[in-house]
Image (cartoon, rainbow, N blue to C red; front, side):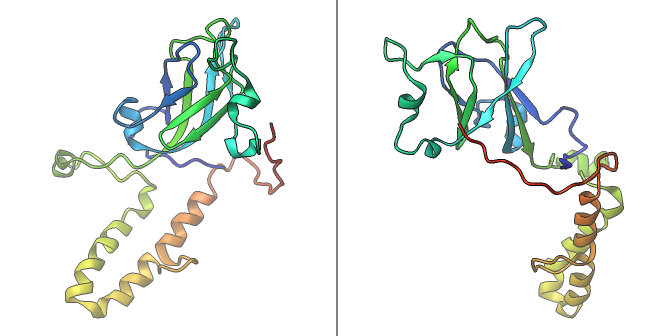
Length: 211
Protein backbone atom coordinates (compact mmCIF):
# COMPACT_ATOMS: atom_id res chain seq x y z
CA UNK A 1 0.00 0.00 0.00
CA UNK A 2 1.26 3.49 -0.85
CA UNK A 3 2.37 5.37 2.25
CA UNK A 4 1.67 9.08 1.81
CA UNK A 5 4.16 11.36 3.53
CA UNK A 6 4.44 15.15 3.53
CA UNK A 7 7.06 16.03 0.85
CA UNK A 8 8.12 19.03 2.95
CA UNK A 9 10.05 16.64 5.18
CA UNK A 10 13.70 16.13 4.27
CA UNK A 11 14.15 12.86 6.18
CA UNK A 12 12.56 9.42 6.22
CA UNK A 13 9.63 8.57 8.52
CA UNK A 14 11.78 6.56 10.90
CA UNK A 15 13.85 7.04 14.04
CA UNK A 16 16.90 5.26 15.47
CA UNK A 17 17.27 4.70 19.22
CA UNK A 18 20.04 3.38 21.43
CA UNK A 19 19.41 0.08 23.18
CA UNK A 20 20.36 -0.90 26.73
CA UNK A 21 21.59 -4.38 27.57
CA UNK A 22 18.78 -6.30 29.32
CA UNK A 23 16.19 -3.49 29.05
CA UNK A 24 12.76 -4.43 27.64
CA UNK A 25 10.91 -1.10 27.73
CA UNK A 26 11.67 1.83 25.37
CA UNK A 27 9.82 5.14 25.13
CA UNK A 28 9.32 7.14 21.96
CA UNK A 29 7.59 10.02 23.74
CA UNK A 30 7.73 13.19 21.56
CA UNK A 31 9.33 15.10 24.44
CA UNK A 32 12.21 12.64 24.83
CA UNK A 33 12.68 10.71 21.60
CA UNK A 34 14.05 13.29 19.19
CA UNK A 35 12.65 15.90 16.77
CA UNK A 36 11.14 13.45 14.28
CA UNK A 37 8.82 11.86 16.86
CA UNK A 38 6.98 15.13 17.55
CA UNK A 39 4.98 14.31 14.41
CA UNK A 40 4.45 10.65 15.32
CA UNK A 41 1.04 9.06 14.56
CA UNK A 42 1.49 5.29 14.47
CA UNK A 43 4.16 2.59 14.32
CA UNK A 44 4.55 0.74 11.03
CA UNK A 45 7.51 -1.51 11.79
CA UNK A 46 10.25 -2.16 14.37
CA UNK A 47 13.76 -3.39 13.59
CA UNK A 48 16.84 -4.44 15.58
CA UNK A 49 20.46 -4.06 14.42
CA UNK A 50 22.33 -7.37 14.61
CA UNK A 51 26.05 -8.06 14.97
CA UNK A 52 26.45 -10.08 11.80
CA UNK A 53 28.83 -9.12 9.02
CA UNK A 54 27.73 -6.95 7.38
CA UNK A 55 25.63 -5.43 10.18
CA UNK A 56 21.96 -5.09 9.22
CA UNK A 57 18.56 -4.28 10.68
CA UNK A 58 16.25 -7.26 11.27
CA UNK A 59 12.48 -6.74 11.40
CA UNK A 60 10.62 -7.88 14.50
CA UNK A 61 7.16 -9.45 14.74
CA UNK A 62 4.38 -7.48 16.47
CA UNK A 63 2.28 -9.10 19.14
CA UNK A 64 -0.06 -8.15 21.99
CA UNK A 65 0.30 -9.56 25.47
CA UNK A 66 -3.40 -10.52 25.39
CA UNK A 67 -2.48 -13.16 22.81
CA UNK A 68 -0.74 -15.10 25.58
CA UNK A 69 -4.05 -16.02 27.18
CA UNK A 70 -3.56 -17.01 30.81
CA UNK A 71 0.24 -16.51 30.68
CA UNK A 72 2.11 -13.32 31.50
CA UNK A 73 4.99 -12.18 29.24
CA UNK A 74 7.43 -13.17 32.00
CA UNK A 75 5.95 -16.66 32.14
CA UNK A 76 6.01 -17.07 28.37
CA UNK A 77 9.40 -15.55 27.56
CA UNK A 78 11.09 -16.51 30.82
CA UNK A 79 13.46 -14.84 33.27
CA UNK A 80 17.19 -14.95 33.93
CA UNK A 81 18.36 -16.77 37.08
CA UNK A 82 18.64 -13.40 38.86
CA UNK A 83 14.97 -12.58 38.13
CA UNK A 84 15.67 -10.03 35.38
CA UNK A 85 14.00 -10.32 31.94
CA UNK A 86 15.45 -13.05 29.73
CA UNK A 87 18.00 -11.66 27.31
CA UNK A 88 18.74 -12.63 23.72
CA UNK A 89 18.04 -11.46 20.20
CA UNK A 90 14.56 -9.82 20.29
CA UNK A 91 11.95 -11.55 18.12
CA UNK A 92 8.81 -9.65 19.13
CA UNK A 93 7.66 -6.19 20.16
CA UNK A 94 4.56 -5.16 22.09
CA UNK A 95 3.48 -1.50 21.78
CA UNK A 96 1.51 0.36 24.42
CA UNK A 97 0.93 4.11 24.44
CA UNK A 98 4.24 5.86 23.75
CA UNK A 99 6.44 2.86 24.43
CA UNK A 100 7.29 -0.60 23.16
CA UNK A 101 8.58 -3.71 24.95
CA UNK A 102 11.06 -6.06 23.30
CA UNK A 103 10.97 -9.83 23.90
CA UNK A 104 13.41 -11.17 24.78
CA UNK A 105 15.30 -8.16 26.15
CA UNK A 106 18.30 -7.10 24.02
CA UNK A 107 21.58 -8.84 24.75
CA UNK A 108 24.77 -7.00 23.84
CA UNK A 109 26.28 -10.35 22.80
CA UNK A 110 23.66 -10.63 20.03
CA UNK A 111 22.78 -7.10 18.95
CA UNK A 112 24.38 -3.67 18.42
CA UNK A 113 23.37 -1.22 21.15
CA UNK A 114 24.27 2.07 19.40
CA UNK A 115 21.25 3.07 17.29
CA UNK A 116 20.22 -0.56 17.55
CA UNK A 117 16.47 0.08 17.54
CA UNK A 118 14.81 1.46 14.40
CA UNK A 119 11.13 2.45 14.36
CA UNK A 120 9.28 3.18 11.11
CA UNK A 121 6.20 5.33 11.67
CA UNK A 122 3.42 7.35 10.12
CA UNK A 123 3.53 11.05 10.89
CA UNK A 124 1.31 14.08 10.49
CA UNK A 125 1.90 17.06 8.24
CA UNK A 126 4.91 19.36 8.55
CA UNK A 127 2.95 22.39 9.77
CA UNK A 128 3.45 25.88 8.40
CA UNK A 129 5.30 28.51 10.43
CA UNK A 130 4.31 32.19 10.39
CA UNK A 131 7.49 33.14 8.52
CA UNK A 132 6.83 30.52 5.84
CA UNK A 133 3.33 31.91 5.33
CA UNK A 134 4.68 35.46 5.05
CA UNK A 135 7.44 34.61 2.57
CA UNK A 136 5.47 31.98 0.66
CA UNK A 137 8.36 29.53 0.88
CA UNK A 138 6.28 26.45 1.64
CA UNK A 139 3.58 24.49 -0.14
CA UNK A 140 0.90 22.20 1.33
CA UNK A 141 2.18 18.65 1.70
CA UNK A 142 -0.12 16.96 -0.80
CA UNK A 143 -0.60 16.84 -4.57
CA UNK A 144 -0.50 20.36 -6.08
CA UNK A 145 -3.59 19.89 -8.28
CA UNK A 146 -5.71 19.72 -5.13
CA UNK A 147 -4.31 22.72 -3.25
CA UNK A 148 -7.37 24.88 -4.05
CA UNK A 149 -9.44 22.72 -1.70
CA UNK A 150 -7.84 24.67 1.18
CA UNK A 151 -9.35 27.93 -0.07
CA UNK A 152 -12.82 26.41 -0.36
CA UNK A 153 -12.58 24.75 3.05
CA UNK A 154 -11.37 27.92 4.78
CA UNK A 155 -14.33 29.82 3.27
CA UNK A 156 -16.92 27.52 4.84
CA UNK A 157 -16.68 28.77 8.47
CA UNK A 158 -17.16 32.39 7.29
CA UNK A 159 -20.07 31.50 5.02
CA UNK A 160 -21.61 29.42 7.79
CA UNK A 161 -22.12 32.67 9.73
CA UNK A 162 -22.49 35.41 7.13
CA UNK A 163 -23.31 33.76 3.76
CA UNK A 164 -25.19 30.58 4.56
CA UNK A 165 -26.73 30.45 1.08
CA UNK A 166 -23.27 29.70 -0.33
CA UNK A 167 -22.65 26.63 1.86
CA UNK A 168 -24.36 24.08 -0.44
CA UNK A 169 -22.17 25.25 -3.32
CA UNK A 170 -18.99 25.02 -1.24
CA UNK A 171 -19.99 21.60 0.10
CA UNK A 172 -20.53 20.32 -3.44
CA UNK A 173 -17.01 21.38 -4.44
CA UNK A 174 -15.17 20.23 -1.30
CA UNK A 175 -17.25 17.12 -0.74
CA UNK A 176 -19.89 16.17 1.78
CA UNK A 177 -19.27 14.77 5.25
CA UNK A 178 -20.79 11.33 4.74
CA UNK A 179 -18.99 7.99 4.50
CA UNK A 180 -19.01 8.37 0.69
CA UNK A 181 -16.93 11.49 -0.07
CA UNK A 182 -17.79 13.55 -3.13
CA UNK A 183 -16.17 16.47 -4.94
CA UNK A 184 -12.50 17.21 -4.34
CA UNK A 185 -12.28 14.96 -1.27
CA UNK A 186 -13.33 12.00 -3.41
CA UNK A 187 -10.83 12.96 -6.12
CA UNK A 188 -7.97 13.21 -3.60
CA UNK A 189 -8.78 9.80 -2.09
CA UNK A 190 -9.05 8.25 -5.56
CA UNK A 191 -5.78 9.82 -6.75
CA UNK A 192 -3.77 8.65 -3.73
CA UNK A 193 -5.39 5.22 -3.93
CA UNK A 194 -4.06 4.81 -7.48
CA UNK A 195 -0.44 5.69 -6.67
CA UNK A 196 2.33 3.13 -7.17
CA UNK A 197 1.65 2.44 -10.83
CA UNK A 198 4.74 0.21 -10.77
CA UNK A 199 2.95 -2.30 -8.50
CA UNK A 200 0.03 -4.48 -9.49
CA UNK A 201 -2.79 -4.21 -6.93
CA UNK A 202 -4.11 -7.61 -5.84
CA UNK A 203 -6.49 -8.31 -2.97
CA UNK A 204 -5.49 -11.36 -0.96
CA UNK A 205 -5.92 -12.88 2.48
CA UNK A 206 -3.31 -12.24 5.16
CA UNK A 207 -2.34 -14.75 7.83
CA UNK A 208 -2.85 -13.80 11.48
CA UNK A 209 0.34 -13.44 13.49
CA UNK A 210 0.81 -16.27 15.98
CA UNK A 211 3.60 -16.78 18.48
